[in-house]
Amino acid sequence: MGIHMVEVGQGMGCPECGGPLKVQAGEAIVTCEYCGSDVNLAVGTKYFLKHTIIPSKITQEGAVNAVKSWMKRGFLKPSDLARKSKITRLELQFLPMFVVHVVARTKYDGLLTRTGQNIEKKGELVKEYYWEVLGRRASSFPTRSYEVPLSHKVDFDTSRLEKGAKFLNSEIDEKQAESIAKGEIEEHHKFLLKTELDVTHSMTTTFDFKDTEFLHIPAWFVSYEYRGKIYELILDGATGDDIKAEIPSMEKNGLMGKLFGA
Ligand SMILES: [Zn+2]
Image 1 (cartoon, helix red, strand yellow):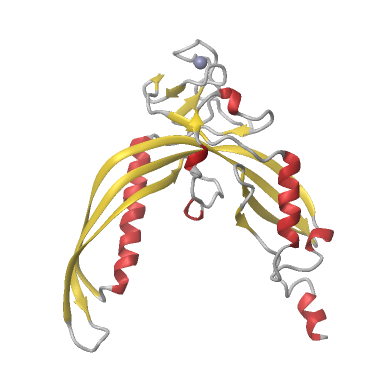
Image 2 (cartoon, protein in one colour):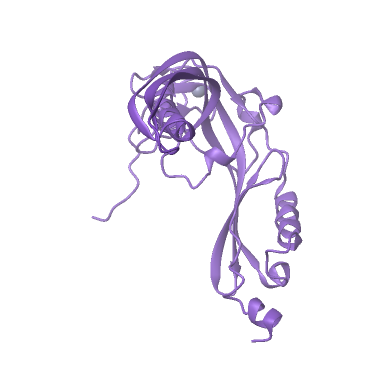
């Protein structure tokens, strides 16, 4: 037998409306496509974290136009990019996201040695974050370079989902999201403290979690082909801005050759 997608929750019904739940392996929180309730699969009951959504404002046509205008913009792109490329994939996805509101406090102790002397450095770095954690483990969505347009959010309702859009359930719950946020913020503080410390004696971070939000955000996943290669673009479904944009290298397409007469 070949490998196939396993529906782990086959036969499982929504605890709210009784409708059949579509569950894929690895998912933790499943949204009922009939009534919009969220179900915590680990316990089989309703998931109570408030759920909101950023509605999509960019239609398929709008996404194509945004891609074309992006291709024509900026001097770092090949001049024939818009003319010579072909869109091979255009998909609107609603991605699960947690926004973790937390105050992180890092106590540090170490030395600054770059001046040639050992200067003792001791202090506390305190920062407040609305840290974003994507609810999917294998998405190419660049969470760190995206800011949720929170002013656009509305209560979750299945009528907010565009027809044909792909809706993705979350593979983690808020506890896991908070734990991921902890690890990432710790790394981030280590990075920030590089300007303060050359030698670290101790560094401990404590977290004061305020609130965690659960929402779905719209993103257009676009692939385009240019001179035989495939590139990826991700557009914010609420604003049309590019969140991720792969640009063909200029040397490979002969443009540099043209410019410099080689
Ligand atoms: Zn339901």
